[in-house]
Length: 64
Image (cartoon, rainbow, N blue to C red):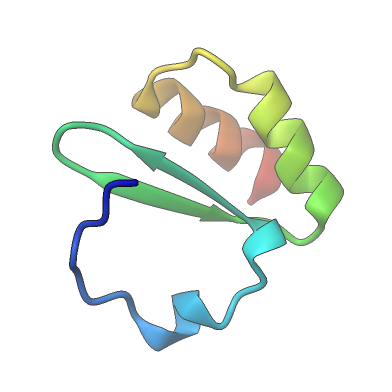
């Protein structure tokens, strides 16, 4: 396990883990939040292998 110490805002910590998808790269960590577990799972399934920008665009066009 690798842990990176950081300050996560309390409002993010309070969101049910099953409603969050987390992505990381060499310079950033992204947390996407969904209304349902099914939305989160669908997002994960449909964005496998996508680059960060492509995932961001997919989230914006499908979940906002």
